[in-house]
Length: 365
Image: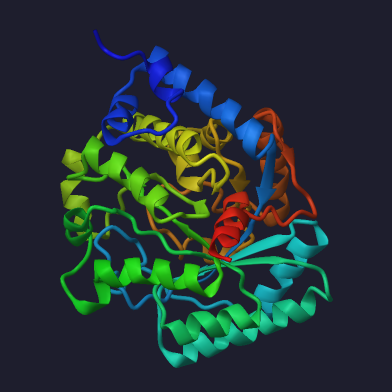
């Protein structure tokens, strides 16, 4: 007789075989998982969603990842780098509208011209905040310890570096075989960030070609093993100008990828009760109310896109990205409504610091 889903979700600790069983669950069983995850969210982090104003300030990238629309060799992408004034104007919007937190995201570069400009931007953001606390998340890939420390001193306090696939063999199928796309360097960056004192985030793509249920279970166990503070993960969505596109016949359906992503959010909330989990835009790409559904099953962060409309088509990591022509105010109003539909309130004027981060730092000290 098989173990009941109710018994699995109430275990003190989920093992790999438990997670695989949950990922394979069908409709009625999945509802049990979602209900449990919603209860855990309410108990450990509350029915509150935090805004992170997202600025995709440059699509210039030194990397050539096989799945990404802004990969270096995609000649069909018009490259851009927002001016400092454009970036600061949008940061000011976030501050004035009580977001309390912004995310600066770009293509991955390590050249000194880029890293010093980011440092300067961080210093300007600190000055703009005029003594108010503001959460600043960076998402710019692997850097040296010196650069990470420089950015930390300049005002960055959170960093998202997605592993994309914790299985090293799968990771190597998604990236060129060279020193720039090295799995071990990616993992080392996660550890460096934690050591410096950043709230550290990672994430994976769900429903990739060549990916198994066991791989996805290992992804969740990877996040637990490495004591991750915040997670941004969602369905893999193909882009026609990438090498991985030729394997689209191996993909689960869009509906299957969305449902798998929803289960991943819910199971992670059950496993790691107090971390921050984003309801990603990719969820909405595959389901019109995908982000609301993610909030109901455990997510507690959402990222209004503050990137000016004229740049958004240049930052297509995948196809069919929603809200490309939606102005910032429209985006904010839409997300407010979506969060209310999910039964949450917005944590205005709150940093929404990961509770897991506080626990991890207390253990470290």
